[in-house]
Length: 413
Image 1 (cartoon, helix red, strand yellow):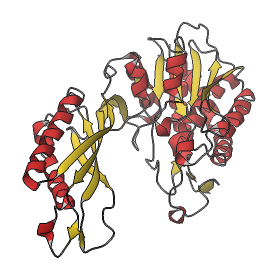
Image 2 (tube, rainbow, N blue to C red):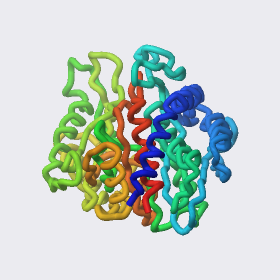
Image 3 (cartoon, one colour):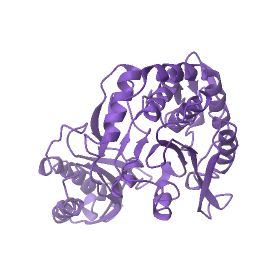
């Protein structure tokens, strides 16, 4: 429950921060935190700026936790924990966002410099503005509103700004969980704002298992005018792609929690084979992305894929090698009736006037790392859904509104 009069004062205070929020977006966008694996220097510059900024906003407790990374220009990948003490420290409310961003991609698809904030009406355009700066900023100003109003929350507020979300979280949340056993508690309210829709009506509580595979088909190269002298690896691989469509029938269960409600098995990336038209390729390589309902065993699916591949080998006289690139079994979901789900639903209803419901997704978020450790966590945001796109933008109204949702969580008793 929240004292409505107090929340109205806090909400009105947040409205006054709009220009400050835009200014912070401008500063963060100008400090691209790109992983070394993606051609960047890491989060160092952005982290230093955020540490100084949060000090100026009343966060007297700021901790930087560095993960070693020899590939980063500074040798480390920084993570920040900003704390605003509550009346008691028996329970914390966490908002976990990430500092890193993806590269801009093809510059020609951007209408402006991706690292210089552009304001168009109620849109803030630039790389990282939505993913994940929107909610990072919302969380800071939600906490600041309580501080400026002189309110001591019942529970301690902790904001986590983590590294390495875009490339696996090994240097980010996963590092924190492995090195800091006492950082989270089982009854903490933990929210990860890294998934959502335009209305804010989806509270993610479950994720599918992820399986990525590399498939290499080997035949015998020859001139295309004499195909009987060779074995066409591309043809065999194409038939294999079609045959793998049958996985959707073998593993055909539905779950209404997820959208799509079924497991998906999709051929995706394909490597180039021969560079000319008149040569039959002796080798062909493609990749397969599977998002699997949690109750299916990934080892069983891998065995089925290899059995189907054996049939193609026999039929076309090729050899097929399958390599598992990534196999991540889904952790147990957060319960639909977990306190964090109820708390978020109440906050979203009071701020946005809609009933948010638990859902499952096929994508992966850092919440999976917390669920593996047994922590109930919910993933939520109200988004324009422009992450990773050229001309990425966030809506000012979402940034301000989401800050009110987080402030509501901070005020709940």
